[in-house]
Length: 341
Ligand code: SF4
Image 1 (cartoon, protein in one colour):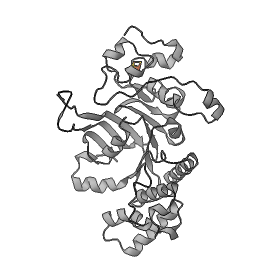
Image 2 (cartoon, helix red, strand yellow):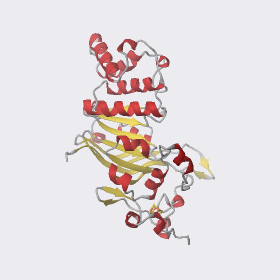
Image 3 (cartoon, helix red, strand yellow):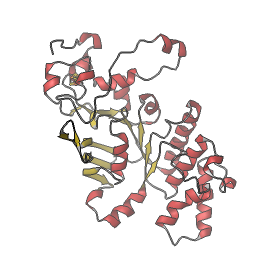
Image 4 (cartoon, helix red, strand yellow):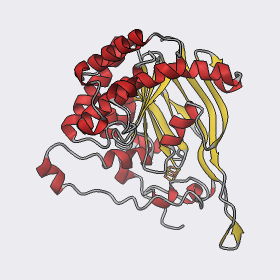
């Protein structure tokens, strides 16, 4: 096993509350990430999953040092604690980390041509690079992501949504980064286009030896791309581990709920399937006491309502659940919830 290229420790991100009062109280700050940590090997893919509001996009922004949340914790990139470096060194290091956005069309400037969009990072970070060299690099990137280099004078609206996402990937890769953070890059795409973009990313990962953080709200998509999986709920890590453990023997009830939500490929079976109800996500402004998942958890007992479970190691992963050992051993029906609370 090689040394991790990216190590994150105790990453916390807080959005300050807007000024003013709410129910006669000062609005509380919103803790979007709380003590998140993981380690990722060079060339591997970490899948980050959770519902809307779980802190996935905040994590992407915090890794890249982008606001507006106030961030604390450590991000070690190739052994250096990025957040402790002088700002100009951080900026230089972060060229090695690039972002692919969720909304392919919305993330591209409609007034720039495809060529100008892909060239923009080069012009920003390498202002002395010759025009000929930039043009050559842009044409090469378009070809690499499966776009016709002769279309570099087209505007974003002249491309399909899938082609726009390829353009976004070309823009992210033009600086030859080592880490690609993909923030729900396929959620806005049709299933067939999703498969093409995932195939493209895996192909580029192999060619360019990229390390990838791939964010999704669907464990079905992550199964195709991840080596490791990190499950986030209301900004906290509920479970993490290698792909096989997460999909074959999930220990945390929230991971089970996410797996339960993955649609089956057979439409007939999917139609007849009975889904367990898990209720609504609580407000991030009024977090439950004890385990954050207890209001939705079918296995909650009194202890869960009072005591916050710590994130504990198991096999090669970690889980934050008081009943994880029992859940790993027994079937769901063998673990009745405590009905006294
Ligand atoms: Fe459910 Fe309790 Fe585990 Fe939380 S700690 S996930 S409420 S069983």
